[in-house]
Image (cartoon, rainbow, N blue to C red; front, side, top):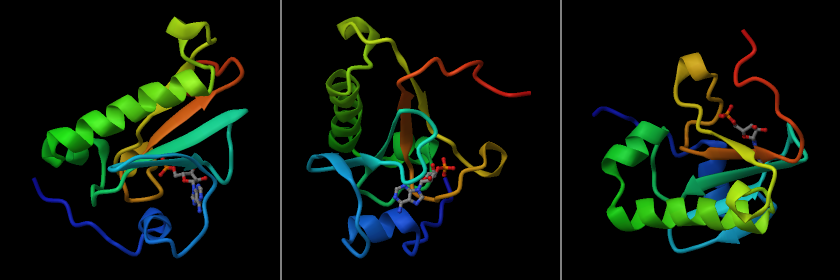
Length: 125
Ligand code: AMP
């Protein structure tokens, strides 16, 4: 798999502490922070600390420890944010834009957690 990671991207800069972020969770391998331009009442971004460009890149090449840490952090956040349907929440949408057709803006793998209101159909077509 051929991915060139550009370490000048904004999330790499956040991970290096060069620019601030509104952190909501941090673990050994994962950071979660509020999106600077929220598109729903709850809009959190979850990123691995490793240098992965897209979700498929991460899923293919990250270690099992990184994948478990990331996945469990998403679960914990959904619970703590009160949006996990299994915990009485009204639900959420998890989005990982990957590549040009998805309009991925930041080339560091990230999962959006969107929630807090009815989110409408999945895609505006
Ligand atoms: P995507 O289009 O999936 O790549 O989403 C990138 C997201 O990063 C957008 O929702 C932006 O609002 C968000 N974003 C960009 N810069 C920052 C930042 N400095 N802090 C938090 N979120 C950011």
